[in-house]
Length: 522
Ligand code: HEM
Image (cartoon, rainbow, N blue to C red; front, side, top):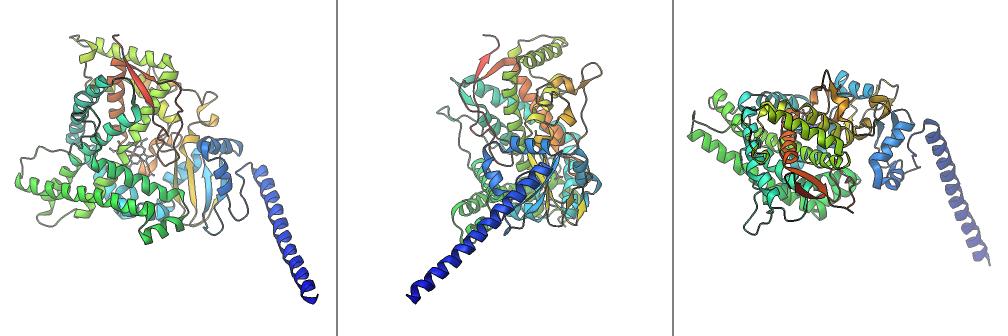
């Protein structure tokens, strides 16, 4: 009897504790809801912070972030689960972005969070570096990429790739093909040629008329995707998998090993090759330029370590690989819905062709660099596509010391400032009432000349000292591909497919986009 009474009392006590915890949780949820309603930000839950809210909105996350940012006037605070300690703000306010990317640049590095996740793959490459290491690579990259030899070389390799491979492949498409896959292959071949001077052969159709699986490209793709996985799971998950060398981390290790093996061999072969052909080198890719520079200046002391060169080239491929291909895919999807823009581009192309002394059939036209530069409307349409579908939808920086952003939002040491590039492209305050429409004309001034916007409003290529080094290269590439295709084909997405973004750090189409190429002369 005594025992029974004792167990009833302790059961009641346990019930009390449970009830008390439930009550505290409910009160805390109500308080958070009130807070969120007052500042109109995201709902933050007890213990789990923003995680449940993110989970609920995962399938339309970019639009959801945009909606919340619109509601709360441009910035809202967040924190992750209490045991993770993640905290910071999400913003779309150009003044905050300018402060972080330029005015107080030193206080907002890429930081430990980014570096820790990318270090195995990218080492100390430009994309993953801060401070002196970044400065040295940035100087080298800007100098080399803007040299006339590199510009001429990249224009030549790009033209060969578009006309020698891409257009030939499109002619062979029997019914429909995944346009995103075609562009990803194109840009991989293109950036590998620019960075390493090698033909990776992703666009080379084999004897069975099938596009090949290229081991280096596949390993690179896997390494990127598996590294990005580290950004979407709690840190303890990937750290444990890594320590045990199982699951995604085991696959990541193997993919990284393959990438590094290929790069090691390419760098050491090129060193030997250039040593043997001193002075008579005909290669102008970045790797050859770095090795050559080293030979010219070091007189035996290596100016760039083997690791510097390797890390530099890998970062370059990562930065230039998928960004322009996804931009081109979204662009062709937007064209399908805006036939007016497509006919304006076609008209511009014909106007430029008509300026030639000798006329040839459209099918044989190869636009020169000078002609590409005259394509103001096409440049405007590409920029407009990137405004609505930026290749990097959300970026972030770490906070070194406590600070206050220009809109008054406090940020604490160790936190993060996320800036939603996707949302910034869709804000009425920045772009006006037609901010969600595809209107290339907004980029044209003075009788149809392309005129750029402030990088702090149009953060598609980042801004400030870390502005994308490949911006000119990317525009040249996108203009060359788009003009060559639009002149010859009307690109028609196959009906009934779902077009939506994939949840990762690059704005891929989740399921790709199947298209048909209808020749203009049919
Ligand atoms: C549409 C095409 C492209 C877009 C939208 C784009 C966008 C960006 C963005 C947003 C960043 C900043 C990333 C960050 O720091 O978190 C960046 C950096 C960079 N991009 Fe691009 N990019 C494009 C094409 C390219 C190409 C083709 C190359 C190379 C040929 C390239 C090379 C780089 C490099 C090296 C950086 C690092 C710069 C630094 O940290 O100082 N990008 N790009």
